[in-house]
Image 1 (cartoon, helix red, strand yellow):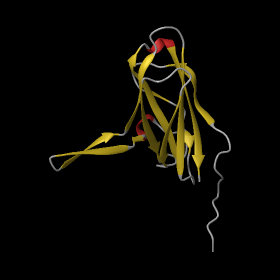
Image 2 (cartoon, one colour):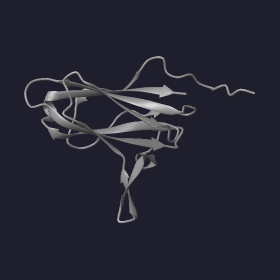
Image 3 (tube, rainbow, N blue to C red):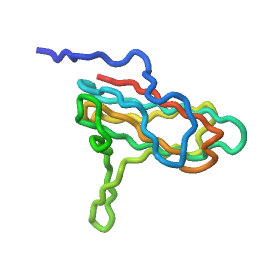
Length: 141
């Protein structure tokens, strides 16, 4: 007997954050349902305008087991660990995009965690007001 997925991979990217200026604090994208999918690609699209663009972007990925509208405390961060002197310490998994190019696209792929996922994004260095960033997602079976 073969496995037949209940859903198909996305044929086109879904915008989960419209183009907007970043801030120095993390801002959440819209959530996207990931139930029954195996992985997700987050595509960060950058457009610079004027002088002094963003020189570093950071993203963190969150999931939730909530099937309806999640509350602020329903989200969990994807974690990674750093081992030093035989001791493992957990950290929020953070993707650094250093020196993002004008009109650049950057991909971060991850296995599905929970029923919905979203991206937390911020300008980590540079002048955030002269760069616009949007995020698309593509779910994979």
